Length: 350
Ligand code: ATP
Image (tube, rainbow, N blue to C red; front, side, top):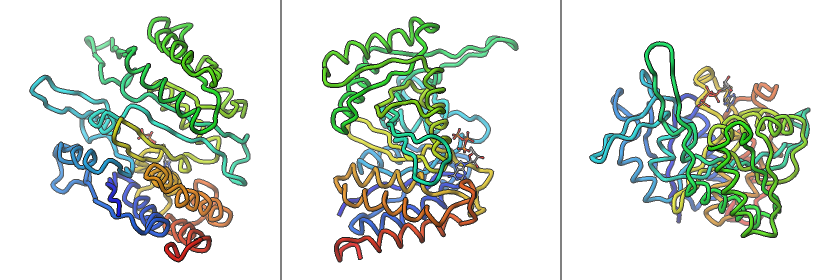
């Protein structure tokens, strides 16, 4: 019996979490859940939205499913007071990743048959999430000037490059594409490129290609990216994974996972969508597929495959408004649960 953490999140978070837990319970009945309040849902109102106890809880469990969190009201930022100096994070999602030393955000980009009229996409985005322009170092100099610092270190890029090449080998991608802008950001993106090229020499079976990130964006929209691990820094990865999710049909479809050395947090690639919270219009598929990634990480590839197949089956007839349908969040959960049960190979999942 494995126990995983559940962070219900803000906005549409609780609705899509409920839908996802129903699907996981059908596909992997042996799982149990420990709910970890983070963000605005913590009882008591204004407070630290990321208590140290929550971070410790996720670390202890080793794996958690996390719905999206909204930026803290008023400040937008998170400040963790520490004896060795305060840590300032530009958003709560960023704070969760960095407090847990999660450095790799993995976002599979796969077109679901029949959903999008756009090109078929099939690649895996690996986004470096420990530094870059989202390091939280921003200054306002008087009324009229503001600066943000882009941090790039050899250590972080060696770590993310090894992670990406290993993934390319393990999952049979055979190719890593680095998106960068080293022709303009010579020193920062230039260091990323230099480190990735160095690490690539240790993986002769994997081809390394590098592309200007703007050209890569255009290639994604035109369906011209070959099957590959696409490695991006924090900001480019944030932007291009939403673009790619949009090309596959809806931002509500994209799953994701954040990996550290010993902790993994699984989350959809969309935000808390406060504009549709409580309306039943939220598409739960991104979080459900993130749950499938978690099952795979826990070693149950069969249950993960069952959930993915059930989502494909359900989407043939049941779609939320972002996909042009009229189904509610819980209609989608019902259909996916039914498809999981219908395909159950053993009495354990019946
Ligand atoms: P963040 O900065 O946290 O990514 P955001 O406000 O930029 O947040 P989202 O919260 O992802 O972006 O919302 C962008 C748009 O996509 C909104 O109109 C929202 O309603 C829609 N959207 C996001 N997620 C879903 C979903 N799961 N189902 C349907 N629509 C969604």
